[in-house]
Image (cartoon, rainbow, N blue to C red; front, side, top):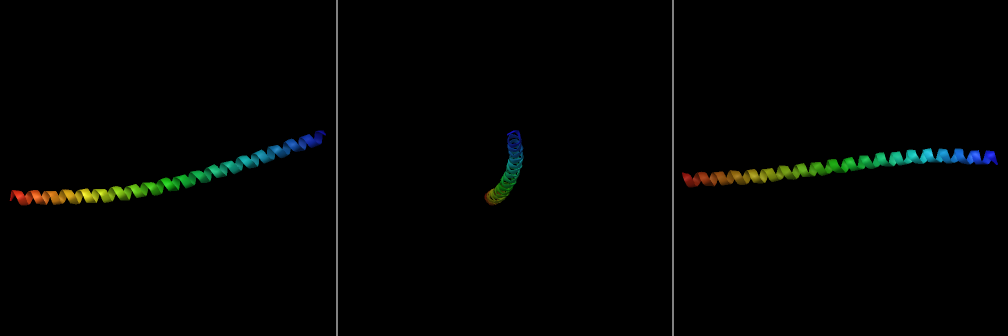
Length: 72
């Protein structure tokens, strides 16, 4: 009886360690996926901001040219 109980406890302890390592790997992989998604999102925002800056800059340039023509 004692041997069976001891074996059961050892088996449960080993299963617990294995499960904890599996959870650790799952959390690590989840972090990697989240990091990649955040990086891609940041790149998309960077491109959008760059394009918006170009549009605003072009508008200001045209506005400046129009003012120069009026004042000449």
